[in-house]
Image (spheres, rainbow, N blue to C red):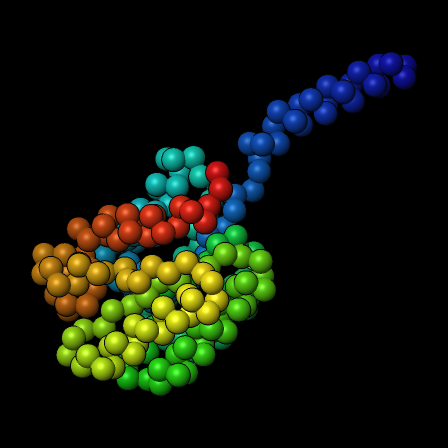
Length: 208
């Protein structure tokens, strides 16, 4: 009887070893951004976030994207909801793509940097990696303001020793055929270009 039980247990253990790898829970990539990441003005499935998930799947990366981006969000609003998002999703990687609405509204750059810095700290304390994504403001805001604005992302990347993607739309925002009528949001044609840009910065942070 004991031999029979032992054989059955061995068979169960072997079966578990064969099955468990396929049942492994995917790591989470959490994206916290604004309209540029929320597929504003286009079908969600055409947005760069959905395209990024497709590429992860087809190339064998066991990651699931949670897109917590909200159109119109500021760094202050995102900071207020980040703690709950980190606790709920326990991400391995967090993409922070914020600041555009702070800049467009002329909000305090010092407050914006403080909000982003606090968010980065929270992510690192949660043992997740950070990909910080910068924002480019329209040139009509003046070179002095836009340069100070852009410097914030480089300063944070250096101070926090994190990966920086300077912009989602560098080289895209000036091309009319890649932008929606508002001149602020990229259209569906631009989304694969954005996906490729994010992919190059993200892959070094991932493991298959």
